[in-house]
Every structure is written in structure tokens, then in C-alpha cells.
Length: 228
Image 1: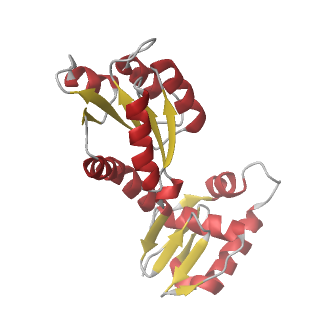
Image 2: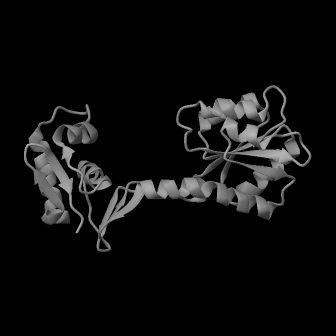
């Protein structure tokens, strides 16, 4: 994932700190949003769904600990990384922060280069998980779910959307037998009323393009992908 597609929410009641952090992270090509207190942080997090939140601890209205707890309750933010911003000498319990759901903490003031390095480290888990989830290899086959692209032996294989989604499902767990009803529900859902023959036709097309040896029919059950 490119930096310009990564969003960061910076939360601090000190406008100078917000401005400095935003300036430096924006120069790194991150998409940066800001908030000045815990209440605004929760609302911004709910609306923007950032990949990383840098959250001050001591703030008016709602402190960082409480804001972190509320953010962790929001749907769609399970993978968001949260790091507390803490001033040296501030009465802050790291244990309380971790119990609230924080992943790490950063001590203020912090130099721009150190901040950049820290942010990269914090995002590494998310970026690796995202890449592993959306771009993966099965044998000589590479599946890129972000770009709907399939490559076999370094040669791109153009696939219509449903063929791609069927292949993505079967390769998500190689050797697992996917039941026909599960395939229909996952790939076609409630879009249209289709029969079992629809799956057979799409598998036949995939066999022609990818190789018949990769697709095994389990009679009366469904299909599985076999990596060679």
C-alpha cells in the first residue's frame, strides 16, 4: 500500500504540536487528519477510519485513555494502530494505556526523523497484514485482489470479475474443498438466481486459462484448488 493511501489521525489539544506533526507526516506523503480533543477524535475516527491514530493523553473534554477505549469499540477499526503521545514527566500509566487498547506510546517532544521512523514501525504490522491479505502467491500463481489481477509464471491472465472472485476463493485456502452452496453464496450472493451449472461453467473456463490440474472436482460436494 502506498503512503498516499494511508491515513493518520493526529489528536492533541496543543495546536503547535498538531501543526508540526501534521506538517512532517504530510511531507512523508501520508494523508493526515487532526482533532483537538477526545470527543472530536472519536468522531473523526468513526468517519475517516484512519490506519493510525496518534493520541494525546491529557486533553480537555475527554482524555486520551477514554477516547482510546471508545475508538476500540467502533466497528471497522479493529486493525487501526493507536499510539499515545505523552510528554516527559507527565503522570501517565503505560499499563492504563495498553489496557485501553493502545499499541504503543511516543514521548514528546520528538524529532521529525524519529517520528517518521516510529510511524513506519507502527504501520508495519498493518501494511504487512494488508499486503498478505490482498496480494499472495499460490505456487506459480500470484493473486492481486486490489487490482483484480492474476499472474501465472510472470504472465498476466485476464479474468472477468466472477472468474477472478471464484479463483480468489478457491486459492484462499488451497486443498480445502469448498461446498457448492458456499461458493454460490460467496461469489454470487443475492445478486442473481443462479444454479449449480454456473459454477461448473466458470470452473471450466478457469481450467482452460490456469490449467485443469489445479482444479479438482469432489463429486457431490464442490471444488478445491490444488497447487502444483
